[in-house]
Image 1 (spheres, rainbow, N blue to C red):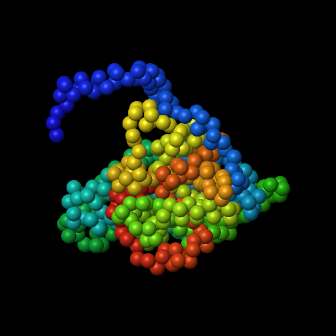
Image 2 (image 1 turned 180 degrees about the vertical axis):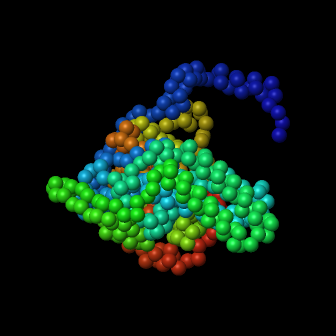
Image 3 (image 1 turned 135 degrees about the horizontal axis):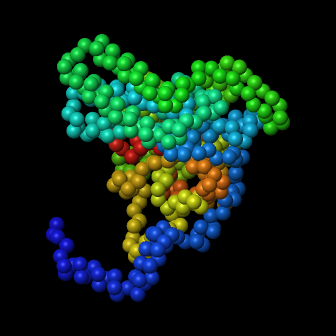
Amino acid sequence: MSEITQEELAFYKEAVSVSPKSAAIRNAVTTNGILQAARDNERAGALTPVFSVDLESSPVANQLQSGRCWMFAALNTMRHDMKAVYGLPGDFELSQSYTFFWDKLEKANYFYENILATADKPTDDREVAFLLQMPQQDGGQWDMLVALIEKYGVVPQSAYPESQASSHSAEFNRLYNGKLRKDAITLRKLVAANAAQAKIDEKLAQFGRENYHMLSLTFGEPPVAFDFSYRDKDNNFHREQAISPLDFFAKHVGWELSDYISIINAPTADKPFNQTYNVKMLGNVSGGREVKHLNLDLATFKDLAVKQLLAGENVWFGVDMGPKLDRKAGLMDTKLFNEDDLFDVDFSITKAERLEYGDSLMTHAMVLTGVDLVDGKPTKWKVENSWGDKNGNKGYFTMSDEWFDEFTYQIVIKKEFLPEELRDIYETATPIMLAPWDPMGALA
């Protein structure tokens, strides 16, 4: 490739100077920024937060400066059911900090397992480098939360409230990941020295105790049992004493978690539809539920989300939350910002191309709580976010159907809404193993 010459620079500049619109556009962009200069206000006005299917809403939660959206989204779907059954107050929440504690502990153990499994490889091996780049993080997948709940249960936020570090996790993550990398050095040295398994196990036990100690001091000691009291919507008082987190989930949430499965829409050539997928090195609870996706075409994918909403059930879903987003207004729409017209550049690529070339992946999880159907077809969706009530319509966002098509990658669907042949594929097909860095292994 040749260098950029002075002649070429002159040609570039001439193309700008001959355009009569360039000065006006430059002033608009330099003063207001790209998105505000490109914003289509008429399009924004058309995305009114009114939906033909609108499930009962609760005040939105706030994950603050943490990456726990996947937990917030899942626990929000559960609290909606609990409120409907028990008449709980509007601000009731399940503790996201409780599942966060156990996720941090389990992810460290899962990291150690992967470090030992790759201990014979050099540190510049792609898998080892992948592990060391981010030993653990806040994000996760639906199946990972299922694994946590099946082992540890859930508690109301009153039994295990937020801490500074659960709401602002960067400080802890920096220290914790540094410790895990140091532990990895020790484990790899033991393997290189042909240490006895008993010696390795002794070190793992030491690391586990240290990790629990750090977590307990940072987030607080998680309850073994707790009292649960509340007044229902009719002002009747209720109390349960010394209930365990597992019993609380079984009694008050009561979901059969195995009924809910992950469906993805990944239209790349390497991922045929109607096939299941695992992701290597993706998980948290050793021996717990594995992450498994069923990849479906967009029409079927979308139809399942509509069916579940029509049945009165919210839908956990995962998206790429960066593109075409007006965070303050709470709008997600592919036509909201006209960057193509602003710069006279065609930025369009397909959903498959975005995934294949690293332009997009799942970054955020939320809850679908409504959809606007016109002649049976969705035109826009109601979204419960976890960014507090200062954005959007008291924290609820409006997503156009076009945005859903382009940037939604995952939904969690109850098996009963799937056709029998798709249920059979999920249950019986041998999953294809994806690389750890595959975009479908991204954590929300």
